[in-house]
Length: 168
Image 1 (tube, one colour):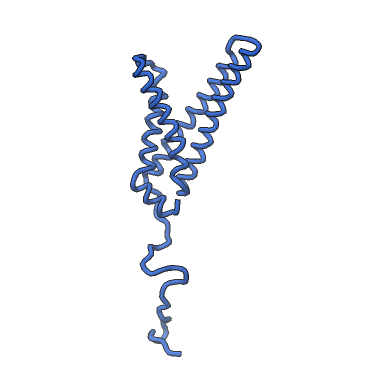
Image 2 (image 1 turned 120 degrees about the vertical axis):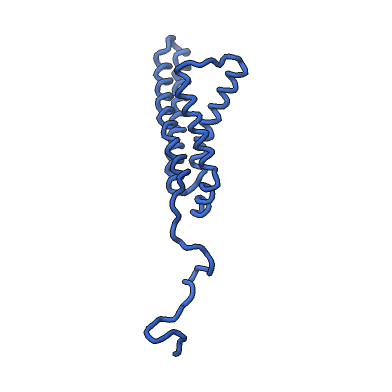
């Protein structure tokens, strides 16, 4: 057998099986800063949904009434708590999915829901002319704004490129 390689050196065998010349290396790129920030901006949303869900349920438990009315009020409170816990679960899973580069939709869904709810409430209050600043409005305004920023960041070009390179 003769090879064109000099003595003591192995011949160039070309690309490994299953790879094609010109494909980028398989070393993973670093997570973009926008994905990290988007994931971290959803943490206040999770905390707020947890607090709001349990606070609403507790308020419904303390509501006055008896019989069927009490059951309906507590049922509504339980339904709101279930929705809040579902959003918390989706946001936590979305943060994990975005962090690992699996799928941007995991974070976009709870961020979009939180931001959408924020926009609907603000527009409704503006349309009714009932929007006046109260100190209790700061948290929902901030959390809704953070969810909107998180949604924008997770759909930014650097994040899209990173998710596409990861196969997500």
